[in-house]
Structure formats: C-alpha cells, structure tokens
Length: 391
Image (cartoon, rainbow, N blue to C red; front, side, top):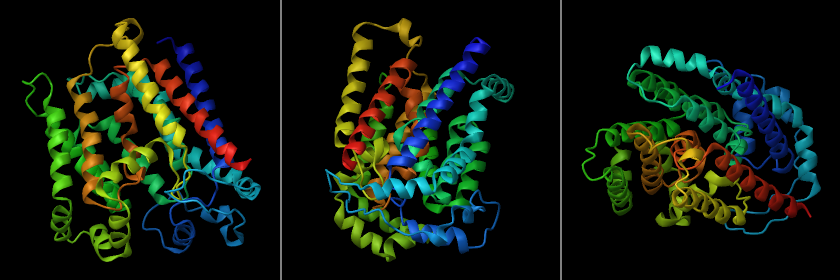
C-alpha cells in the first residue's frame, strides 16, 4: 500500500473514531454503566496491586457527582425518554472521558499506524504464518468504530483495560506462549474475562485441529454439538464448575445473580441478549430495536450481492484460510456455550474482544468499504434513534 494513502486512511479513521467517541459521550447517559457508583468507589478507594490506568480517577471529581439524569428504562423497554439533564451531566465530564478513552486506545492505533513494522516482526518469528495483515488492520479499524466497542471503552471500569489487553489475542493467537501470557495478565485483572478467554482459546486450538474431510463442515458441527450440549446440560455443567472453587463461579452461585439472572433470562434468550449488546445496548437497557434488524439484513444483502455477482475483484480474496475459520467459529461457539452455562455472562462486555476475529472472517465475504458502510450506517440509525429519545 502507498505510504501516503495509508497515512491518509489512518488519519481519516482516527478522526471518525474520535467523532464517534464524542457523540457517544454526549448522548449516552454518563451514569448508564454497570454498577456505576459501586465501581467508582472501588476504583477510588481500593489499593492498586499494580499500575492502573485509573490511578488518576480523582480527575473525574466524582465526589461532587449529583445525579440529575433520570434512567427509567430497562432491558425489557422498547421506547425510551431521556431529558436534557443527561446531556448536561455528560458535558461535565466530556474532556476527562475523552482523554481516558484515547489513552487506552493509543496502543491499538500505534499498531495500525506501524502495520508494516508489525508485519516484519511477525514474519520473523512466525515463518509459516499466512496472516493477511491488511485485513488485520481493517478488522481492528472496524472494531474500533463499532457502536458497542465505542460504548464499552467509555465505561469507568478496570474491565475496559482488560478488554484492550484481550484484543492483543487477535495479534498473537498463533503463538500459544504469547496467548497464555496475555491470558495470565487477564487472570490478574478479571477472573470472569479470563474464563471466557481461556474457553475461547481452547476452542480455537480444538477447531483448528479438527479434520476437514467433510467439506469444511467440521467447525459447524462442533459449534452445533457444543451449543446443544451446553444448552441441555446447562445447570449440571455449572455445578461441575462450582467444584473448581473459582471465585467468580462462587460469586455467581452464592450471590443474588444466580437467583435473579437465571430466572429472569431463559436459556434461549441469553444469546439474543449477547447479540443485542454486541450491536449496542447499555447496561441499563438503552437500545435501538431498528438497528438489530437493519444490521443482519443489510449484511445478508451485501454478502448475497457479492456471491451472485461473483465480486472477486471487490473482495480481492479467496475463501478464508483455516485459521480464520477456526477463530470465527471459536468466537460464536464460546459466546453461545458460555451464556448457556454462566447466567450472568450474557452481556457482551465479556466477548467484545472477539469483534476483530469476527470482522476478519467477514472481510473474506465483504469488501472493507462495504463493511465500513454497514458499520457507519448502523451507527447513524442507532444515534438517530437515541436523539429521538430526547425529543
């Protein structure tokens, strides 16, 4: 790729990213975050075992926080009503939130900006790698401008830092040693995310080593079988996990979560919640129903158009390689199987790091321009919906 064109492309998408962050921080109620007050107090008062990106948390001045925005909606609400106080609260912390988000994002943008150097380093240590680094950069860009990712990285939570650490799995997944190192870092940050990351990586290894004698149908068969097993034996598998004495599992089984979430959300509803929050849904349930239908329909139309017209010149690619297929099916298999077994893991915050893996697969069926149009048009529809809630 021409260096000048690549720099222009980088600046263009960085500008879009900053614009979407500013739009999100202006329109989405600031306090619409999981356990907002509890998390802020914990981040302020608990001693840090190691360096935390939130060590400057007092800069947010939460001691003087006064709630004026009314959040009266929930996960079952379809229509919402927001008042101007929500925007006022957002403006109070506008600059500090932007600085916080950009600080976390710098490493990923650094990698995208220095793609050629990263590719050279990768090729040096992984001689047999067939990774397409242009698609890797494009997948990361698509992830960064996705509305769900924009929302999650604006949260005041150390889990956000965990998400950025786990995204590096996308770059090093071919190395078991480096992947294990990242998972160990995640274990020190958040056990819930570690459980998901470990299951995900094990699924990659298993699927990647399945025989491909049935016309590449083995990943699909594995996905269906594991989903069926975890659905049928959901509670039994949870009890088995409980014997491992993992703190996170202990919290689920002995706290209010298992009594509330397990009864509130039937098994078949949990993957739907995961899908909705992967597109966009706040922790309190702010959503855009129209976007949930628009995104898959437009995606289907684009893929169908490319297959009918045999649009190989636009796609500039063949079928996805074995590794990309394995990572895609490991992603959806992990999401579906985990939500069936762990009732409080339906929300997409545990799976947001898988977005680059999903986009990397889709980019073998969509052109990058088509994917950008899909993401940005869905985002436009989403924010038009949210703006209407203020009117």
